Image 1 (cartoon, one colour):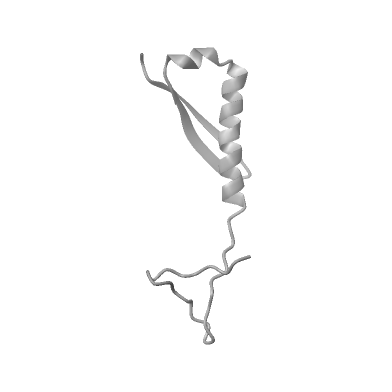
Image 2 (image 1 turned 120 degrees about the horizontal axis):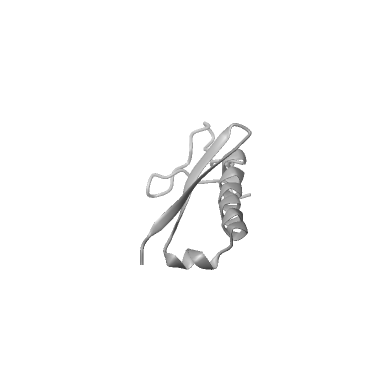
Length: 79
């Protein structure tokens, strides 16, 4: 059983995603359309994260300093 990869690159709105689907002989059970769909799904998931970053608001004290937990990590404000 040989391990191979299908390298691919998708660009949209100035963002370029480079990845590879790593596979063994089982890839033969997928159609070219299914492989293309897997590539697009990977891109879409990555693009959604890159273009919609999570906004976190941190707890602050009366002076505006971040409040830290017992391990020294900032504490997010619950939404």
